[in-house]
Image (cartoon, rainbow, N blue to C red; front, side, top):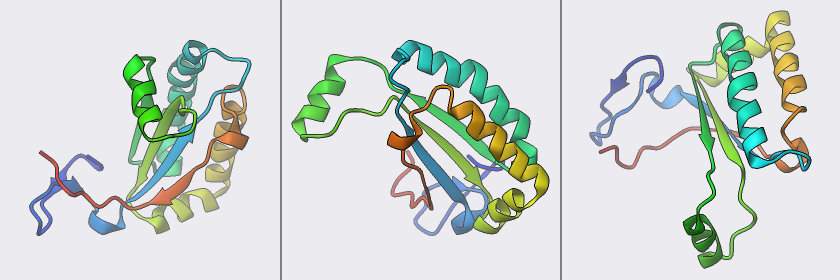
Length: 144
């Protein structure tokens, strides 16, 4: 839920407040080669997450979620069944009320400084060359 509430679209599925204007950044992450999965995830959750939270207001971030991969034989079986590439180590997801809200936040000197601080910290544990990111809008198919 973004913005503390949900609305019911015509199809009956819940969607974040803000409707179709809500923008999501998806950032599948691969760790730096000198870090174990455990060290990467610890740094991401214990060090980087508080930094994102510190800058959330100036960057107008409505929601921040970390998805941490865990090792399990089923992960490899699922990947192999589809001929998939090596797995990501996690996925960061961030939401804004609108594209305009995101653009306005990063256009300020404070927003630019916050973005630079986050990028500097990310370089400590993320292999940025192998970690794509993109903006998108969610289309909820069902939400049971």
